[in-house]
Length: 426
Ligand SMILES: *Cc1c(COP(=O)(O)O)cnc(C)c1O
Image (cartoon, rainbow, N blue to C red; front, side, top):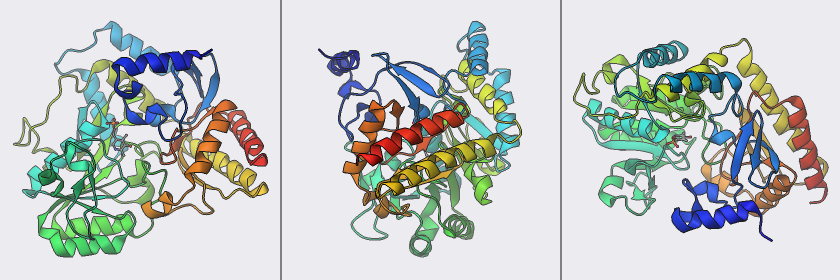
């Protein structure tokens, strides 16, 4: 007898490629049947078979307050009753822009879009339009959404131009992207020495969260800032994941580095489709209708989505919010490491604010190459054992995890206890 999750997955595959609308949801890298979620409340989600899980995915980052926070849902309901979309300006967009610019001092102006992908794609076009240059510098393992310029992997040698990492991306376009190793400051200096006058922008996840979690190692971010300033390139911090997640001012506040442009998404929509890009006034003034760089969106600044984002961001402004979130997330990592250690399982974990990484290797990785050396078999085994026990981790060894303000000390303790059982039987 097949479960309801299985039935739905089979039905989904008939008319949706792979049965999912975003590939990682298909469980390909861990195997098994994806859980079809029917509802979420606080730290928990319930699947189509009625099983309940403590959720460490949080919709891949947006749900910093947990699922269906009453005040966020109330804001959405109120906005929806007044109309779903107008394609004309609304006051809540101003409230959102003012709040974002107040919270992040590097933002002088900001434009709203509907996804992180749109934010990064637009920021890159803007940087190219601003500098009159084409070349983009990115880092292997950093994900910035799925626009063409960004689906590029390193070329055959250091400082050679990139190759497409997806079918359908023209090689000609990939040639305008240079891909370097994350945390390798020397490569950055060498790349600017070789190509500096052609580099429009450097785009980076200031804490990498799309190759599992990799912390920036000094002086990496400072080197990016220095080299961009020296050569007149635009420094773009892609804080779609880290914005308001690693601290009240994102990674830029945590590490004290001011980017020229910042991209946002995830948390600023509180679970609804909102992205944003913003930064220096002189650069942002080049966007249409003020300037020659075109950018638009039928649903940009959508009032219902913005209501969810504003309600979420306002709820983060309570005293000590990020300290508490960071402490709770750290307690999860410390608990998992201690449990693995007691049973001799090669395992490490770390957290930054409300995001964390777990690795089946003895020490936390500092590079893409190191993260690739973690034991995927072990991760799969851990993932499925935890899922069976009611703890939902990201279904891939190369994704960060997320704790929300709705995760109680008891939730964390329950997850650590379940992991200890899994490690005991290792
Ligand atoms: C999630 C993510 C994106 C893409 O955002 P979407 O809303 O999925 O398009 C871009 N950059 C980073 C760092 C992300 O984590």
